[in-house]
Image (tube, helix red, strand yellow):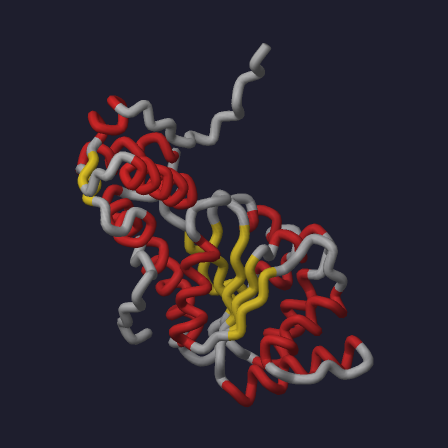
Amino acid sequence: MIAETRTPGIARIGNIAQCQTALERAISRSANLPGLVCFYGPSGWGKSLSSNYLCNTQRGYYVQVKSIWSKKVFLSKILGEMGIKPAHTTGEMLDQVCDQLSASGRPLVIDEMDHLVDKNAVELVRDIYEGSQAPILIIGEEQLPQKLKKFERFHGRVLAFVPALPVTLADAHELAQVYAQGVQCGEDLLAHLVHESHGSVRRVCVNLDQAREEAAAHGANAIDLTWCQKHSVKFYTGEAPKRRV
């Protein structure tokens, strides 16, 4: 089991536990079971926040893929995270990554996996797994499991597909301690922000920060939904602004 820790400044939202479940399955899997797990969900649901937190607590190697990266750049970024000087060729770099994962026993977390899928670089991740047998957590958007189906050899090595969860009222209470620190937010306000977020952790964070700024501007240390309506506080809902003529 992954040890329970409490880090100051980190909101312990439900998706941290969900991501932890995914990583635990790979770390504690039985012999001969695959060690790839997939954590997926819509943008803004706290996947990267959760995986970063777990990487810090588990000393995992974390890399967030960029859309323009080549296979060689991807491997060099992993090696940079490992503190290893990359070799000259892609094949040598792959061996370096596999050797370090195997020797360290530390997990590898690959965020924004969709970019590797779009570049047909999925087999490279499978090569890393086959060469190290290390637990690997891949993270991506909601359609990632469907995208991976066309890569049969990779898809068959995924131990579990774990979905990210929409933000909850309990999450909002946790987030308020970080993003609206020093301000007591009413239950009705938090419930409203959760409802308007459409599942997005990021939108709740943005709106809690907005509420904190408005409270500070008016010298208030406790606010609720009625207070926000009275002071015309505008919250972000994800809707594009309408054209003003």
